[in-house]
Each structure stands twice: as structure tokens, then as C-alpha cells.
Image 1 (cartoon, rainbow, N blue to C red):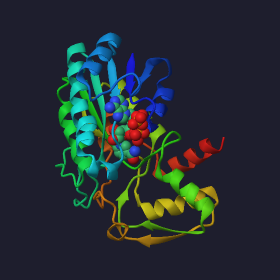
Image 2 (tube, rainbow, N blue to C red):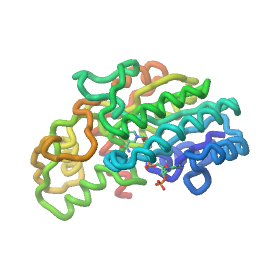
Image 3 (cartoon, rainbow, N blue to C red):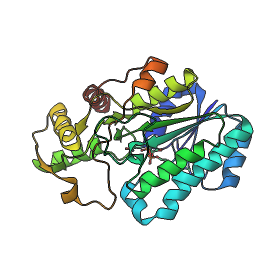
Length: 276
Ligand SMILES: NC(=O)c1ccc[n+]([C@@H]2O[C@H](COP(=O)([O-])OP(=O)(O)OC[C@H]3O[C@@H](n4cnc5c(N)ncnc54)[C@H](OP(=O)(O)O)[C@@H]3O)[C@@H](O)[C@H]2O)c1
């Protein structure tokens, strides 16, 4: 059995749908990953072969003012899951982020590149990666710019704003790969089924800025919205973001045979699914 922790989140729900009978989902009502007792009890009772940790504190700006919560959920909680997986002989699959990098490399990041987070969220997720290694059998999957049917995300925000306004301003100096949660779920299952261990990057292919992504969303959705550029400095959000954090996914392709589709094709698939 594959246990999905954080099963009610954006990725968790798409993963559960893909896993079907193989999956068993739990979320904050049934497990609190910041409590070692709660984690040991649940993992000890269910005895899963695999635990996929989708639970996280994902409010990037909120983390800046809630350091303890960020570290407890994204850092220490992963350690409790890892120790429970070690005790039960389970594989721990843990989700991480491009925000562990500082974005200064200038070319796509590979799995072995040195991390250097710019934000509390990034630091807490890096702590989680290190704690995941307490499980002898572990798989860390880094992704970025996630969107899906079941959570707050950039695509849904743009579609909502685009229905209300005919002009928007969106940052054009952050570059990454928008990633559809269903494609990420496919990559995670492919990595598990191929017996992979260690760290992998999984994101849709090709890259763009948030500004280009917003324009593509409006084009594909048939909305006539003018998208003006602005800089990250002008936007002035509490948490610093990496400016160029594209993730190279060659290792995923080589070890599983899975080549994730381009972000633009994935966006089309998402909008088609969403309209049904
Ligand atoms: N979203 C992105 O753009 C993005 C990008 C890169 C990486 N990631 C990573 O991908 C993973 C999945 O992200 P997501 O966007 O699907 O997350 P999400 O929608 O925020 O879902 C996280 C889930 O974890 C639950 N949770 C929070 N604290 C918990 C705790 N102490 N114990 C048990 N469950 C808890 C949440 O419940 P509540 O909602 O009730 O708090 C929620 O159901 C995360 O590891 C995230 O860091 C996300």
C-alpha cells in the first residue's frame, strides 16, 4: 500500500486519483506530522510499503513570519516520517522545491547543485530534504510552479482576475517551468515503480517567466487581457524568490523513460480537463 500524507492538498488529490486502489490517503485530521507520537502511531498501524509526503506549509510569504511552524512542518515533521519509515522498512518519498536554490546559476539546476535558499520556506524545505535521509530508503522529488484542480494556484488566480479585468501586471524576471500536478504525480509513480532512490527533479519541460505564463493562460482560455511587465523588486513580496530556478529533469527521463510534456502542452491539457 502507498500511503499519501497530505492527501487533501493540491498534489495529494491528483496523486490519490492516479494511484487508485494502490493508494491510501490521510491528512491533518488523521495525522499531524509535527507530532512524533501521531506519526509513529499512524505509520505503525498502517504499515505502508511506501509513504509519499505531500504535507507541507506551502505559504511562501507566510513562512517569513511563522518560522517555527515552517520548520516544524517542512523540516522536523519530515524527520519524524523518516524515522517511522526506517522503523517500518518503508520507502519515504518526499516532495521538495526549486526554492532551495538561489537562482544565480544561470542554467538549469541539476540534482547535485549546491542548495542556497533565499527564504524561510526554502530553508525549511532544505531541512526537510536533509531529514528525509533518516529513512534508509528515500526518494526526494523537487518540483516547481505547481498548479492543479485542487488548490490555490497561479492559473486559477489569473483566470479569476482575467474575468474581472482587461489589464494586469505580472513579474517578468522570474524564470521557471510551470508544472501540472497530474504530470508530477505521473513522475512520482514512475520513480517509485522504477525502484529509484535519491534526489530527482520533476517539472514540465521548457521554461518561461510568470509574465509569459500569464499571457499563455489568457491566450489558451480565449481571454483578451493585456499583461504588462513588472520586476520582482517592484512587486516587493515578503519572501525572496530565485530569479532563475529551472530544474533539469534528464535524470528522471534516463532512469524512468518518462519525458514530461512541455509546460504549454500541459497547460492546454489542464484547461481542457477543467472545462469538463
Ligand atoms: N505549490 C507549489 O507551487 C509547489 C512548488 C514546489 C514544491 N511544492 C511542494 O509540493 C508538495 C505539495 O504541495 P501542494 O501545493 O500540493 O501543497 P498543499 O496544497 O498546501 O497541501 C499540503 C497539505 O498538507 C496538509 N498539512 C499541513 N500541515 C500538516 C501537518 N502538520 N500534518 C499533516 N498534514 C498537514 C495541508 O492541510 P491544510 O491545508 O489544512 O493546512 C494540506 O492538505 C509540498 O511539499 C510543497 O512544498 C509545491
